[in-house]
Length: 330
Image (tube, rainbow, N blue to C red; front, side, top):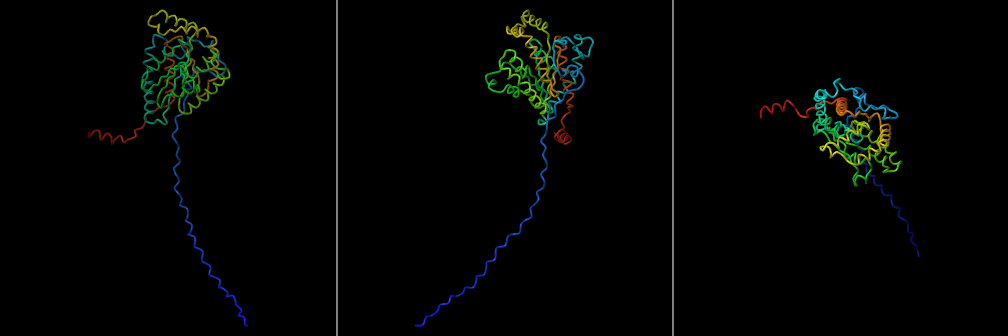
């Protein structure tokens, strides 16, 4: 039987499908460079290098308060002293009020860059912190002033770092802030009365320095005044409070407890003055036995620091001539 040989049919190779053409790469479109944005910066703080500021500025180095004359009248512009205090005040008033208004206007017109000023008052009882606020700070418009008096910390404040309540009270743009006592209570009373461990209050000097350097960088000019009253003058003022019915309210039995610790407080103040006396936040030691001089000296320091800010009036953010025309036609 014949067999039929099957031959395999060779298949023609199928034509390869052409690979899909890739779309031509698009040339990257160059985006226009975005303008570089520099956020507005506050005006740096200033420290005057002349005038009364230079006379009362505490030099660097160890501090011995017993060498500071508490009755001195350094830089006072009149030989008549106390008898001419009203005329001296009137002479400085126009310049002081003008500069404070310029500062206030800057805060309203340009809050991001407007400077701020912080007057810090420290001193023993009867040194005159309240008197300075009434007679020196009282020379300027009260709407541009923020006053904070620091008493014993509240329960809430004790739950935070000692600088927490200080930071909350800082003045706003264009404002003058006034601290009646301050962060320095936390290296004074806490040290004398042993309210915290020594290692804690010792660490606070550098923390205060860093904090104040940060304030200066934010455009806050610090004017730190130690009102230097003598032990003898304090006794006279406390006695006056006991002899005058209109001053009974000012007297506190605890004043004598603090007075008994005068040497310890002087030592604590000397350390704070020495260790927190920096280029951006120096101390000014104000002779405080003569009230009239003390008040003038702090007002003059305010004036000199405001002058150093070189304040100008804000520019109008509208077309002045156009507004004049509209007003004339109204």
